[in-house]
Image (cartoon, rainbow, N blue to C red):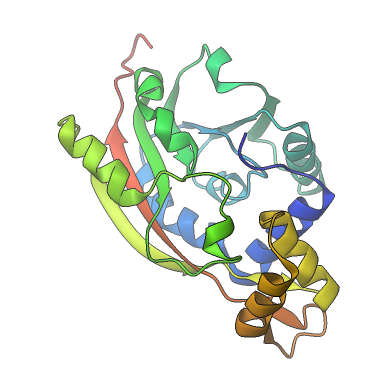
Length: 236
């Protein structure tokens, strides 16, 4: 798992989504393509923020993740909102034995997409683009991400047909204080030097008129939404 869910990361991620509507906008692009399907599985769902939107457009949603913290958050949200058609499961995708009409994978899960094709009729892969602003200095990135151009090249080289929707969405980070901003950047780049931390925040952090979140780190996230036909048939 490349991302650690804890009280802070859950708080930051939820605040960013509430502030920008990032996952609502992704869901609005995908929901029209769910017509005629009744079941969806989000593999590596994290907090399930896109599923809380997509559940209004499909009968049944299964959310799978290996993080107890993420699944606990999602279960709590489901209960608070009285959502009856989302099932959140703590499990590894390697243990999947079921099939769904649609499988949704995002960002890191796209590396293993071929193993999911036999278990669905349609697969959506949401992959990071190249031209995004950073929430921390890029030189401190701890792992290499699969990008939309790389994923596209992989599909093309294997002759796998797809439909691609490219979009850039605001997914900046609202913050409650300068201390919160410093903590956020340090969480994403633990080895950052004090000088680089100060320089990055002075160049990127902006003030807002929002009393709850007086500071904001702008972040335009370029993504590619790949729609791929699955291999799962009636006997799946």
